[in-house]
Length: 378
Image (cartoon, rainbow, N blue to C red):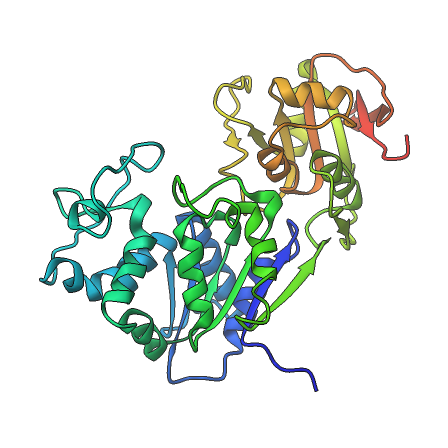
């Protein structure tokens, strides 16, 4: 009989139900004597966990379930309870100092107060997990022991966002008696918890390959899923060109008017928006969206939208003329194109047929709009 492994790592594509899986598993925990913790990097990620759990639980977020951002988890559960081992006093650590998170070097001696804290006793964000590991060492393992007494399971969403010493902290958690259940997608590695100098080969998109090497020593069951429930196959096919490798397949059975991937002329955008009411996305704020409110690709991560209209930047415009060429750093583009369920459209200054895009007609509001439609087989 196959041994039941304690921990689980799920590498899954956009729209595969990662958040749903975390919440469904949390609802079925049999240990009622301890709490359950769900962690995501961003506030938006935490909100998604809360909403999905409540959705599956008749609108209720149970009292025994706690939801934290990664930094809230590290500060509240790991650093503050054992700050005495660094400061020789309690209730001194305030919050986080994020001012040096992307570039400022730390010249203080390691494992000293100035190394971990600023003058206001805020933890330097780049060294948060490192401080938690140090406190666990100095307290003879009390940091992790305390967690074991409180929690039966810890769920970590957006695993690919962890960086640097976060990975060392994750290893300690995996070796504890707590069940650790992590989900993520290396193709959506658009954010990171801090500017890490260490463990670069273990962080971000590389974390899944690294954890594969720990399967036996850390009792990890590693699962992979490239089946998306979110979007139709046309969107899956296009996303596979944006980020090649480990191709996504769709198991969506949607049936809606005008589904697919399109290019829409700039002069027809008003009619298109009025009819389809798409969410408008862009790479970043430098892209002109003709006055339409838009979300940046990175901010849209985790969202599921019915229809999306993208105002492409320079690299994406070039890619649309020939999707066989590679996009540099495709992660953000992949996030953007995998948001919609039914249709994905790009604003174009002119329409030119190519290997992948062919002339097509949309009939809306009694008017025929000439567009290009994505056809994987031409």
